[in-house]
Each structure stands twice: as C-alpha cells, then as structure tokens.
Amino acid sequence: LESRGGMSRNWELQQYQRLQRCYANLAGIAINAGEVDAAERHAKEALHYADQLDEHDRYNAEFMAGMACRLRRDDACAVRHLIRALAGTHSTSQGQPAAEELQKMGLGAVKLGRL
Image 1 (cartoon, helix red, strand yellow):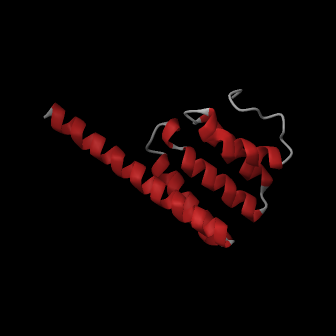
Image 2: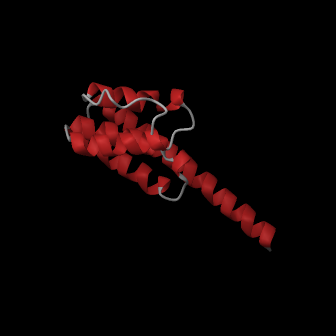
Image 3: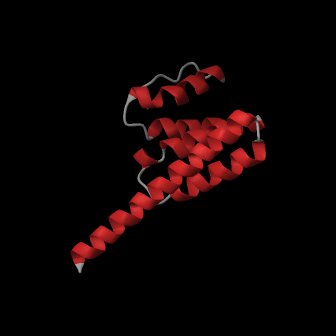
C-alpha cells in the first residue's frame, strides 16, 4: 500500500505540474494578446496549481503572474511575483527573463544568482 500511495502522490504532483504549465502558457498567450483580465485569470489558476509544488516548480506561474501585473501596470504586484520567480529558479539562464523584467522596471541592482 505504501508504494501505491507514493505512486499516487507522484502522479498527483505530475498533474499539478502539467496544469500549472498549461495555465501559465494560457496566461502568456493572453499577455501577448494584451488581454489583461484573461492574463490575470490564467496566472491565478497557474499559481493555484503551483501552490501544491515546491518552489522550483513555481517559476512559470510566478513569472506569468508578474507579467500579468505588468500588463495591469501594478508594479508592486509585478515585483513581488518576479522576485518569487527568481527565488525558485534552477539556473541563472532560467531566471534571466524575470531579472530582465525587474531591470526594465528600474531595479537594476537585481543581479542573477544573488537572491
């Protein structure tokens, strides 16, 4: 029973990862289309599924939430999510888009690998 329970939890986490990625992708599409409400709605769903995952699996959801905030012109919200995205990165190359967005916002002191 323990091994089946472990497999079940692993399968459940994989589903959360897939759903998180799916909603993050939908948020990205909405952001590119300039659809603020859809971007926020999909980013919120991505974050909901990402809440079930560890911080390293949250990058896409946090990044898209930050970009949705940027689209809404809510800089405080954007900074919060982009910093969370950076905190959960596996590598500096993965975190580069979030760091670049923070730098565009005038937070040039944010350096990759320093969080």
